[in-house]
Amino acid sequence: MKKYQWEQDQIKHMKEYIARFGHGSAKLARQAQSKEKTLAKMVREGLTEKVVKEIEGDFKFPNPERLPPPVLMFQDLAFGYPNSPLLYEGVELGLDMDSRVALVGANGSGKTTLLNLITGDLTPVKGNIRPHSKLRVARFTQHFVDVLDLTKSPLEYFRSLFPNKGVDEVRSYLGRYGITGEVQTQIMGQLSDGQKSRVVFAYIASQNAHMLLLDEPTNHLDMESIDALARAINVFEGGLLLVSHDMRLISQVAKEIWLVEDKKIRVYDGEISDFKMRVRKQLKLDS
Image (tube, rainbow, N blue to C red; front, side):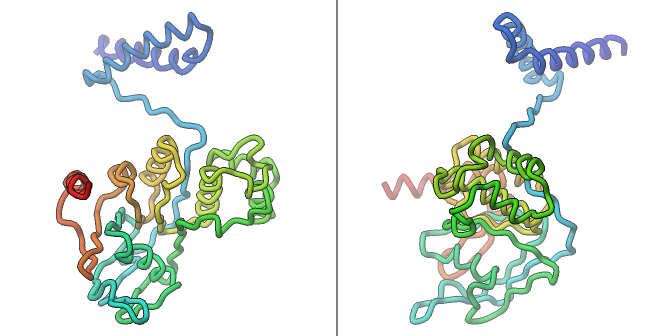
């Protein structure tokens, strides 16, 4: 017992040393790196748990109050655009606050259309979409800049959203999404697409939604930002319906895949890893 406690004390000491001196002087940094290697070996051998670093600028979606299932139901749903064949029919599926669904299919199969049906921007030609009476939905679209006033800075824009919050409080909020320094006061029309994406995610988070509808959210994000988005989704206690071709994000967050094909939307019968291999094979054949 004494030996175990001594080992735990040593592990704790190493973690504290790494955290304190990992970015200090050259000598201290080298010593911290040496301890980090030792700690990594102990992690591999199962002697201690992996250190999870809190990353500055991570996304965060606040957790809403719980709603009893079903939160959103599709009942005999069918849709097609005027003078065109049906995209799908007979859809009988449901979402709740534990759902982590990736909606996949060929371009033009109706993935974004389903999101438009959920938000009421389109009306089914048959059947119903039944949301919980208190359901709040937040959506990221491929035309994400449409929700922003590009003549304002992020700071001005969010102060208009939160008129009762002070400047420092709004600055702190934006900082959580990697919108820091001069970017906060720069006109949004002059920001990069990646920076605008982060502003939109900060806006989505402000809605405290029960369900996130994300349509190709990674198009303008780098890999670190994609991983940050995945971490935020994984700790979020609401539901997710994701439209994406990004297997990096899908493999990190999806628990279920819905396939849109042959005028149907059906649950994929298999593991996410199996689907990933299927996509790779299709791409190889297509090439």
